[in-house]
Image (cartoon, rainbow, N blue to C red):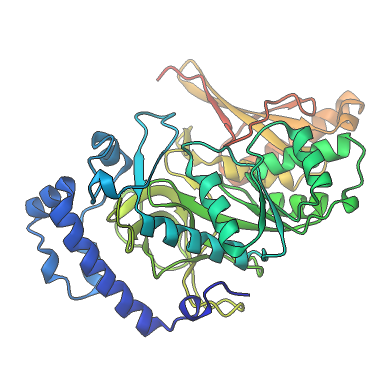
Length: 432
């Protein structure tokens, strides 16, 4: 099932020619209209008119989130404000927020790209879509909202929070597709069980989840507990929002909308390209954004290009599920640790819940990593010897995966804080 079959199934030669033409146009526009890029290009001796091949992309400078913050609020816009019909921004929780703008044409393209992702995930005009992302400056809710309306689906803009109300509306309004973060979807599944409602009484068929890394084990749990087909989708505010890439119903990688974005995967340290199949940092160049184009934007997200075609028939390249972020990486005892690695291990151990927290402390000169793990009530009724064996099992599995020893502490179910938006997994207590 396609939203724009001709474009989504374009042959490689036509796609590359289209990308080159749009890249040339984009480079000329940013050079003329964005002082940041004019200065960068001039410093490097880059003339946009000299680009004759997609391979020339590697000559261009990277753009970072810090570059966008320095240009706050409108310094990176490529059109005058009278042409900007929407302004949105990142949360700014790690510093000055990044501000993005959209022209009328940007909004039209955005809606179409999200419609592609939703259609690939199974959603049609006959569905009732419940959007449980927070409505506000965050791009997720509005992008998915307009994409669903573009398809012709019925939209319930419930926003985030109030899990019991989410469940009631899901039941009363006969929701068929749930859109939110995977961790919030898990909280909804828990609440359904606590309320004693048979999940088979719901009309749910699809779940489209994003905004944070999540493992295949979490996908399996969501599919079993909510009786849905769960697909992943990817986007980020600095590039557009949702609609950059999404899984089809085959669930074998996220199809990148390559007629609107050029993606690269680079080594985060050397910044050199890595071969297909190898994990690195995702870098994105926009091809059709008018108000806020970006060149070689370093997303900090870790993923890989999946080689080979998809059985769905789409010809666009695919990326694997995002494993984590380079700035989420925890350096402990000389090892690089990602929360997604811990999640994957815990999901494979019967008795643990998919909720955990990482506490990093320093005892003297030694780092100490403790994982707080929610477990089912039955674990606490086991004898002390059985509890100790259970903890040892988790520690061994984690040590094998992470390459460092960790402490494990069992906590009651639902004792760790639940988040309606992106989950906060790490508590840093080291005084570095």
